[in-house]
Each structure stands twice: as structure tokens, then as C-alpha cells.
Length: 212
Image 1 (cartoon, rainbow, N blue to C red):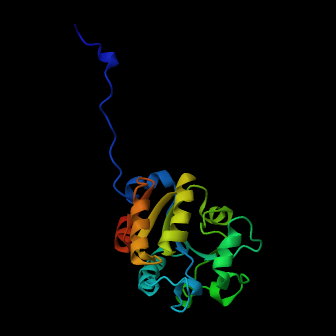
Image 2: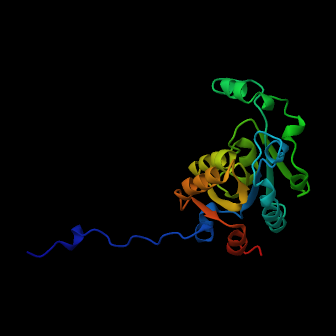
Image 3: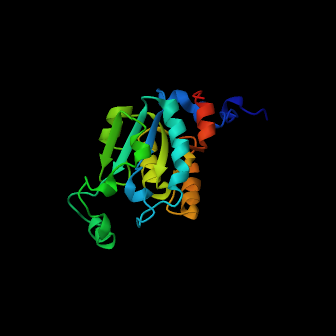
């Protein structure tokens, strides 16, 4: 019996997207560099929340910022004024961080302040994807994420952003985790979200974006 050709399933699968440059058109905009929470509380070796490799990410971030020009956003984490729900036991455990938003712990480190970025966003949440950042970048931007901590505020920014339709690139050597294991585990988890999210080195980002 002859097979009805109209019932055959299509064989065209589409091409796998290999990286940010491969899906740039879907973002509809030039990329924005977001430097997440480059603050004293995460950089000072005496801080309970110090990211041990913070100093190692300063130079990659500086190179990226120079290439991105005006399209750089700095973010700051500040404690919520009103502690509700799970924030109450959180600040009972980390009482040292229960300070006013203008406390020196939450200052940008000099290396970040010296980038001369036009935009700074402060949020009382781990994730920085919110109304303030959207107002700067637009609703479905291409975000290039750097900063600290990979396993907290970086991943907490990345996943809500891709849920909203943003294209995200996480720069592995321009992020620092709470420790090396947590840093790598967070990168590995985020890499599962391709093609909405890709993990790249700073050299790859500069090359793929044509910013070198």
C-alpha cells in the first residue's frame, strides 16, 4: 500500500543556536553590561560575605566596561527596610548586614565606581531584574552579566530575566562565587538554559560582540 505523504512528519529540525551572537536578533538591541553588586560587603576580605576571588574579576570587568561604553549598569544590593516573611530569620542569622542602605558595607568598591557608569540600580532583592533595570535596558534586552555572587545575585538576576524574554550572557571569568565549587555549580546550572542563556568568557564576549 502506498504511504500517504501528507501524513509524514517533517524532518527539518532547525539549527542549534551556538552562542549569543547566533541569537542576537531575538534580543532586538545591542547588549548591556550589568555589573552586579560590586560592593564592599562582597569584596572586603574581613566581610562574612566576601567572594574570595573578587579581585580576580576586577580586570575582566574593566575591559568589558571599556568596550561597552555608555551601555553599562552597576547594581547594589541593599537590605529591605521592612523585613517580611523569610527575610526575618535571614537577618537574624546575618545581623551584621542589617544596616541602612547608605552604610559603607553597601558602597560600590572604588574599581566599580571608577568605571564611570551612567546607571546605578539599587534593589532590596538578590535578583536585579526589575522595573529599574527594565527602564534602562528595555523589556527584552541582551544582558551581559558580571559580578557577585555567581551562586546568589547573578543567578537570581539571570533566570527571571530570561523568563521575561531577555537574552542573557553570563561572563564566567568576570563573576565570582561564594567559593569555587558554588561558582562552578551555578555556572553549570545556568548553562542548561541555552539558547536563552549562554556562559562565555570575557574574551569570547568581546570577540562575539565585535567589541574588541
